[in-house]
Image: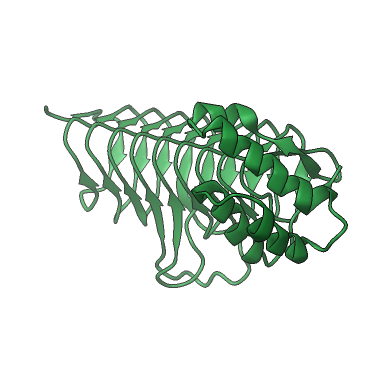
Length: 260
């Protein structure tokens, strides 16, 4: 199908626009932008140089994609923002491109970014995540798949959030949030396994009990976090989910959150 690009939109002739793309009046699209098939760009959206967007995305009013990184190390290098397929990016969302030459900020597929979300430079986001109103993600963060951030969450720089975790409203954190858990409060702390999301993602009920047992060792045991990993390997039946927990904890640089 033919594109529907308003004459009142400012679209660079150097931008690459796919098929069946609708661009509303007053959208602004710079050079070196790629927009895949079946995307909808609403009024007053700014898509800046370095954006490469897949198919089926909807970008709502006032969003800014590939904004210059708010990083004192940025020297004007050519960097990118990579966005996958079927994302919903609501009003006034800001996503920064990466800081250093050749770097990328990455947003996967099927994510929902609510109004006022900000995702900073060099952050990597997986698939099927929900970012609640006003959530702010700092630079160099990593977020897995199926993660839910409630409203007004602040994730500080160089931290990670594992698959199917949930971070409750108003939480600010500077340590890693492991997979399959609920985290919240100030200071942030472990609030139990996230059985709701595990069930939604068809994690077997027996495996969910194994996940709960693994986190009892981590958060309620008498040993260090890293000794608890040894206990998990010795005491908890193996599964992809248990291996994910172990690998996540082993890979932490910021440390993980504590128990309530």
